[in-house]
Length: 132
Length: 376
View 1 (spheres, each protein chain N blue to C red):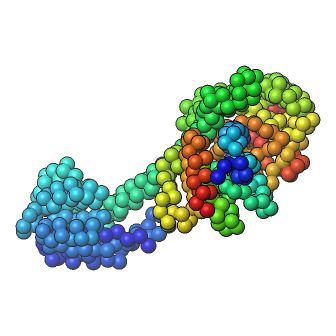
View 2: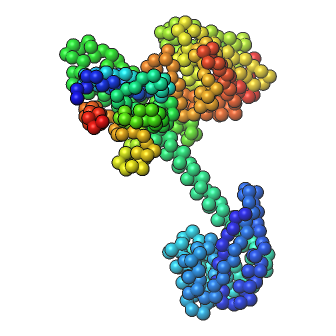
């Protein structure tokens, strides 16, 4: 599968991170749609269905990313969701998506630390999409 | 009701029964405690028995006779000190062996009760111990709460410090990989944004230092007569370059020759924070009004803008640390999110009050009232 027809939704309230992600993923061949807040993303999701999504965790709410994952998964369970955040390493609150019980309350498919290699996220998204 | 467990260790039946009778229906209350304290009395006839009871039910206070049939009281004391350092041990001892009691306090006994004692004497000693216990508990709880708040502050702070690092790192990687091609000019925005983020980080660090100085009380204060006219002129000078960029007019209104008694630096910090917000969250071509007036003996400072305003929800969060609101018209603005907590803490120095009135899309007015410091 090429990335050419994949609509990727990226949500982050840091406009610089958003800009950088857009440049990277567009170069990797995705159709990138961005939103700068949980609110904006929610509005987008009311009418549109992306093929994959990357959510920042802390936006208007401390758990905006989780809220968006929950909303997206309820509507489109098959759309892969990646949470991208710097939160865990700071608070020492480690969460992963390894066990079914963790996936039960965090409705996301993968979790990446901010500053992670965006190429790894690209690979992960393609893996998810090939499986479905 | 708070209950304290007391273990009485004595081989004399009379003493045990006596203490039990005295404490059974006894309650004590302190003004700092909502609930009264009462007692549950546990009994041991020997040191060996005492050790068992201690391990089983971990009392808070032990009344310990030294002369016991088997192992001596001092041995029990040693055991308790090694294993349960939080238990308060009070030695029961006769006047004849007062030296021993003193010795025991050196070994970690909290207090001693000389035999024979009256019910009043026993109660007084126990009350003393109970008070000590509760104060200790309360302080350790307060200590933990403080730590918790500090931990939250530090985790948010590290998030705030890491965000710009991530952004700048991302831009540097883009340059390194020549993501935008080989033309240097195409990287202008990347460099510009990196500088903006680094600047934001510097502001955060400076604000943080201000806040730390205020909180530790290490800020040197210089209270003097401050002429409002000069104060306002200085504040307006600072903000003007920024206001010009957004085409914002700054207006001033104050009572003639008004003088207030305050620390000028502090007033400038307050004004700079409020005015930079008033410009930041304003509309292009908007206005900012700076007002001061004496009201009886107190004086009032007001900063009003014709900006984007705030919802009720936002107003509630306003004075928290690291709170920043999105303003589509103030794109790329990087405040530290500490400005208003600094303002609030400074106003508290003067036992003053700060109020905010705001309408979405209409503007915001901050009003600060400083008590007793105005001369016209």
